Image (cartoon, rainbow, N blue to C red; front, side, top):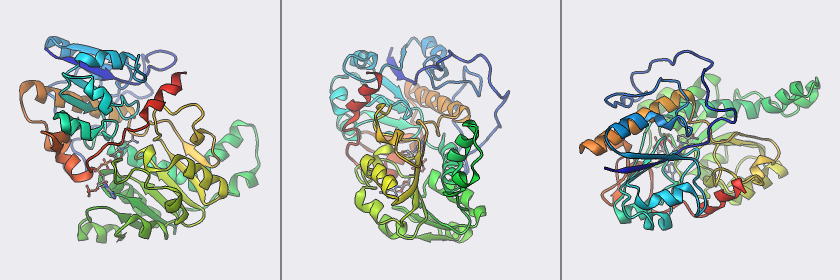
Length: 399
Ligand code: NDP
C-alpha cells in the first residue's frame, strides 16, 4: 500500500464553508479542442465544493483509504522542518498544486527514495525539478486543460482592468470619493490596440479567441505555428520571436510554461524593447518576469500596468515588491483555482491515481515526465532542466 502526500492551500480564515453562492456548475462535456474532461470511475465530492484547501482534500480520502492507502494532507510545505519535508521520506506519491506549490527540488527528491509519482493538481509542473525527476525516473503528470479556460477568463479581466483603470476607480468608491478625473486620467479603450500573446497553447489561443470581438490587432509567437485556418479565422499575425512581437504591442499577455528557455524572459532588456506605456499581463509563472525589472518599469512609466496572479516564490514574502509597486493588478495565485476548475482538477487527479494503481497508462496529454524523459504534453511544451532554484525563500512568508 502506498503513502500519498498531498499539499493543499490553507482553509478559509473563517473555516470551511458550509454553503456556496451558487447551487450548480454548468455541465461541460469536452474542452474546446475536443479533449474529454477527466474520466475517473467515480467522484466522492459535490461539484462546486471547495476542494483545493486542506479540508477539501481534493475529495480523495474515501477513495484512497478504501484501497488501503495512507493519505496525508497538509499546507505546511516550506522549510526543512515542515510537515511536507518530514512526511516525504517514505511517500510514494506527492500531489501538489501550483497555487501553493510544494517545491520538489533535487535535494528533496534525493531525500524521498520511495517517490515514484508527482501529480500536479492543475497545470504547470515547474515546482518540480524536472531534471531531477527524469534522472530518478519519477513520473510527473498534470491535469492538462483543467483550468486553461479559467485562466483565459482571468487574463481578459486583467487586460480590461488595467487598460480601463478599473481597480483605482473601484477604490475611489470604497474610499467615499467621486473624483472622475483621478479615475480616468489613466483610462483608455482597448479597441484598436495591438495585443500579443507569448505562446498560443490552450490558454493563449483561448485568450486570442476571447479578444477577437474587441476589435484589436491580434499577435502571437510560439514554438509551433497555429494552422493557417486558425490564423485566418482570428486574423492573427505570427511573429518568429518575442522581441519582434512585443515592440509593436500595446498589451502583452504571457501564456507559456516556465522552463529554462522562458525563465527571466522578461528582463530589463526585454521590457525595455516594449512600447512605452505598454501593459504586461502574466498569469503563466512569476519567474518568467524579472521581479525588480517589472517594479522599476512601473515606476519609470516604461510599463503603464502589470497584472497577474503568479509570483516567485509562492506564497510571496510579505515584502515582495509586486505587492506595493505602482499600477499593478496582482492577485494571489487564484486564476486556475475557481470552484469550477477545482472540480475538474480534483477529478483529473483521481483519474491519474486510478490509472496508476490499476496499472493502466496515464493519458498521454497528462504526462510531463515519464520513463526518464519529457513525455506527452511535457515533450511538446517544456525543455529539460530545473526552474525551482530560489524556492526556499517561500519559507519567509510564515515568519
Ligand atoms: P499548453 O501546453 O497548452 O501551452 C503552452 C504553450 O507554450 C505551448 O503552445 C508551447 O509551445 C508554448 N511555449 C513553450 N515554450 C515556449 C517558448 N519558449 N516560447 C514561446 N512559446 C512557448 O499549456 P496551457 O496553455 O494550458 O498553460 C500554459 C501555462 O500557463 C502553464 O504551463 C502554466 O505555467 C500556466 N498556467 C497558469 C495557471 C494559473 O492558475 N495562473 C493555470 C494553468 C496554467 P509548443 O507546445 O508549441 O512547443
